[in-house]
Image (cartoon, rainbow, N blue to C red; front, side, top):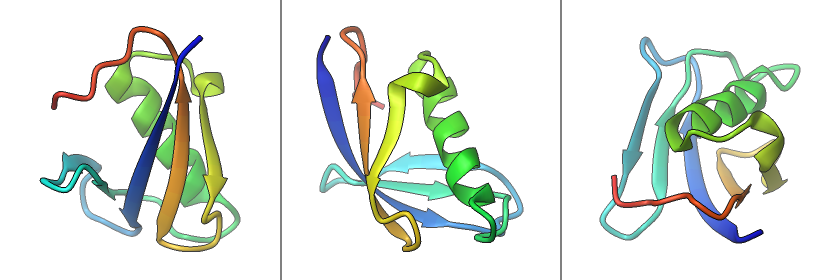
Length: 83
């Protein structure tokens, strides 16, 4: 199984959920959930799983749990990041 590492900046309390890949390869994710009680992290995992067509179990936040910049690992063989 392959692993893909993403650097993600999250913006909680957004009006709409949106995922944008930046030119430098990092991702900007607008989340509707507030950054309390892990709600934004849960929404981030769900958002990434839906975007890449994988299960939530294949997405893990490795660092940055309490910050806006996070290192996320995707465990999947068939993920493409060309969006």
